[in-house]
Image (cartoon, rainbow, N blue to C red):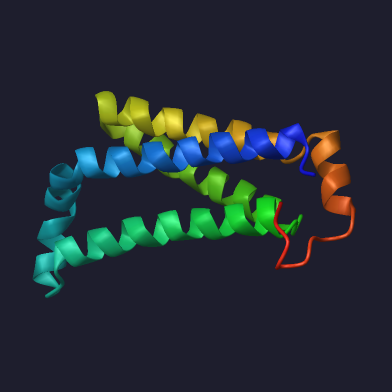
Length: 140
């Protein structure tokens, strides 16, 4: 049985992923316009690159979730922490240059992700990670 801390981690982490996706969909045109000038000069399609970037980030977040919450691979928590630090650094440069609701949603996503990752480091979660890993067939 998974501890409450891991269940909270999952809930908050999925909330952060949902906010990231919602923000990307909402600001898609602005993101495409800001990146299109340089990409078009290089002969790249900004739409394809933007969709691939969003899919890659969400894919990485989902792989980290699965490895942490379902496979009990504890070191992935540190990879998530590194990703969180990188996202915070990126967000700080965005905050310095922009204002508006997209920044607020971005900050909310990073905060949700930070709280989720913090739940993976509480004592009950650490004890759960220290226990024997669950076989791939049984993820109850």
